Amino acid sequence: MNKVGLIAGNGKLPELFLEQCELQGIELFSVYLFDSVEESVKKHINSAKYSVAQPGKIISYFKKKGVSQVVMLGKVEKDLIFSNLKFDFVAAKILFSSKNKKDKNILKAIIDYIESEGITVLPQNYLLDDYIAKEKVYTKKIPSENDEKTIKIGIEAAKMLTDIDAGQTVVAKDESIVALEGIEGTDKAILRGGELAGKDCIVVKMARRNQDYRIDVPTIGVETIKKVVEIKARGIVIEADKMLFINQDEVVEYANKNKIFIKGIKHE
Image (tube, rainbow, N blue to C red; front, side):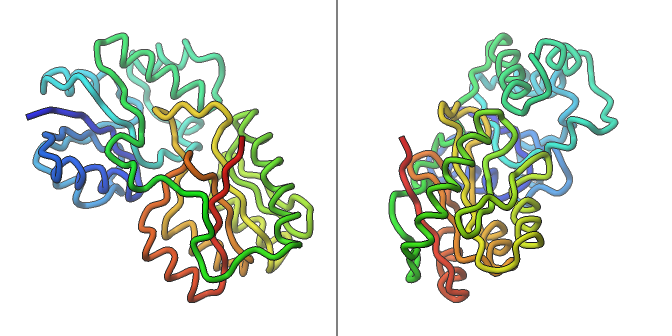
């Protein structure tokens, strides 16, 4: 039986990955980083908990289990980087080797170290191709001609935001940018946009131009769409072929019920 390791953060992606491993007969060994991860991940037979600040112990765990390939999935809140974590020697070494504290550079430094220890880091869409967003309008409601003008501006802003590695989501309204995602993450950025501009905003979430699929593939699911509905937005735009769209049936049903659109769009 093939073996694969999982470094699990919060959200549904680690659980979906676990299910796919079981379906395909792959033996999974998982390390979860927080008590708030899904119960199925915590209770999995080959599961262990280590802090995000203990990469040395995480690597040792996988080596002891004979794991030579791992996937990193789930949310790790950005503000952890600036909290009072007690980093082990390996973590300190990784942070020192990173160019700066940008998400992408820290994650790249982590991946480089893991692979220097003989463990390959697989892309986050490994086994999850069925969840890749497609180029289509998923909902009954479609964007209007005026919406498309705002969407175009939102895409340009979101791409510029990814270029400086500050975030991947913007909130736009009436052809203007209202809010940019920062350290707070997508959901809080959406809520802030709603507070600033009121109803009828449009949320735009895009991938980095040269997305490293081992690192933080953008994802939307139930919680994201609930935030879009909460601010009474007109809808959300996501990047086709470069993002994960999970719990699609549930999300689309919820969007239709609340009369908002979900549009997948390609961007070259």
